Image (cartoon, rainbow over all chains, first blue to last red; front, side, top):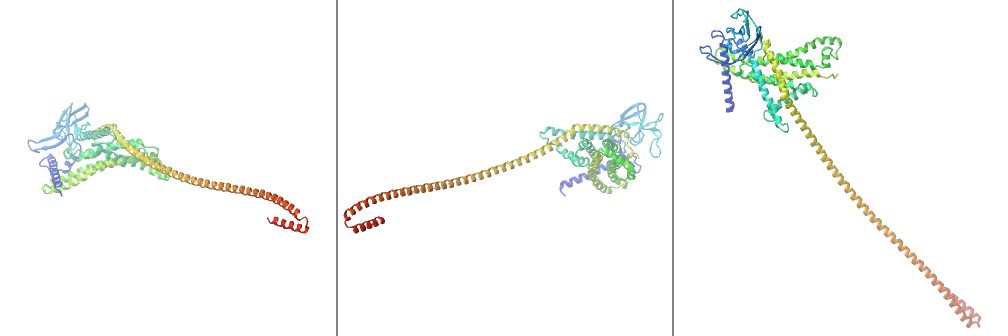
Length: 366
Length: 164
């Protein structure tokens, strides 16, 4: 082992150790006396939140200090649009802090904003922790996932606009700088995904969608792995994967040709009873394909986050330092796998989308 | 579990953001990048094709040169052959002509000789006739007395003349 790799390893281990302290402190937020609750800690990290929490100093002491990027909470209530910054909850997500805005009282219960019913001053929770005297208004807040999504959009635009520019600058269409880094990826999507899945003649129409989906998912997968962003788990959020799967579904359905629908409703080349038997199966298949896309991406990315967090939680469950090296080593291992998974999941989503487009546009050849 | 319940806000923002991103990247990134890449690939393909064409043309040219050279060589051979033939023919003709001329000269000479001979013979004959008349005169004059002698003399003279 050379000195530089040794240094790097030590640095990584230290870095991950620091990372794990962050989790520990988060866990303690729920009260010093309480037992460490790995499940709720993990869920808070994996799910969406109203602010971008970076770090907490002096946890549980008098001068406790949170560093959080406040994000706007945007609600549509009976009184119309209501907006305020997430910092007005003062890092509370147990419903203690009541924010009064635009004639309504709002509380944050596990990173969900509830509007208290008329006349109520305090939120009441049932055994499962759900409010009983409050309703959810229409909530289009800029949560940390939305925020990270926009950051990723800006990054993507910067990267690809610069890449496109590098072609314009050169006289013979040879990219330079970031363009030469991006080109193999773009060509990969074209030659390894679009062309074989859709076919030489029709792939061009779908290229913008496939490229956008591929890089959008990939970059958000990568952002999800950056510890300081504190669980920006956008591509592991089912809302995000649902929207992308929905787009694939819509494009597939609208580009379906006669041959595609024939294969669904009246399968050629099989006896009539079989045609009738296959029809409902194929019909369900239209919907299971995008649903599988949605669940696959969501589950893979979320699972990765949960595994890393769970390994870190071991330290606090066993309440000993001795577990730390094991946790660190394992989460390092999983972390490396996750880096590969970021690309693989983006690739799989894109390939399958392309495959569905290819099926929808395939010409009859029987 | 709300982990698997899609939140409305995020769905809303994802739809809007994704559509905007798709539009922007499509217009300002994918189109120029893919266009440039395919243009370049096309350019490379064309360059390779034209290089191949040039190579073929070169080959054709070389083949042409070779062919022309070969033709020239063949032509030279033919010309040399022709020349040789013409020379031989000329020589042969000259020879035959010379021979013909020679034989004609010889013939003429022979004819001349023959005619000379004939003339000479005729002269000789007339000469001999004159001579014999002279002799006959003399003999007649001399031997008219002696008949036997006369006859003998004539016979002897004639026999001698014939032998000539």
